[in-house]
Image 1 (cartoon, rainbow, N blue to C red):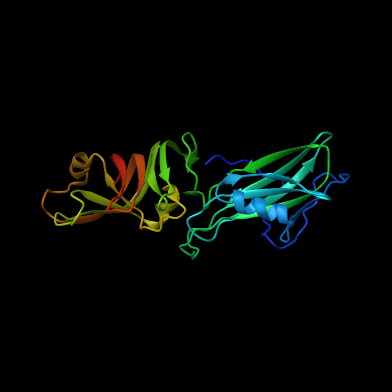
Image 2 (tube, rainbow, N blue to C red):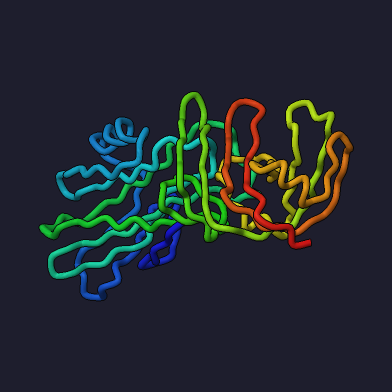
Length: 268
């Protein structure tokens, strides 16, 4: 997905009480990550944590910003404070959302990551700058039409959080992948070829952050795929191949369903 450069690349965990000084050496304003919060801030956390938002709370001695990530499907997510800059009339605060690494063990529980910033009282306009990012290059969490993941553009994104995260994300643009094609005429669900992506090609295939399935897909143009790969109907077959695909589609549902792609070319 599209990425903007953070002003300071530093991740602070909620509750560490760490201070990150502004980029301007003469700036009297300080922005601090805190854990112990006033009652009015705690109330704001509890009412805002279910969605992505940045509510402002005016306190007696300080002002506060509560940055919430919303409801996440597992543990391992966090909000990062990436620094701030003071201009003549603005206080620009940068932040980002962090997701678990692909190989990280996570708990299958709903979580509500947030972070609280304590800010010196100021008359300057506060501007929030969100740093967009993907995890591990091909791993993403918030698909939007027009975004890019490892060179593939999202053309459709239909996601639901109820009762759990499910949905469909479609892409365009060609990609070359290596893997194993397998045809089993006795397969319980799939009446066609499945293509299992090799490890070296995994970084080039978009993947939802919470999707722990083996990466494989079926072909939308299965009849052409059988001809190009030399697969005979009714005869089990398996082999290695390097192919070019387009129109990759992630289907993540609570049922027997699989990802899809259009076979464009068989290289070898």
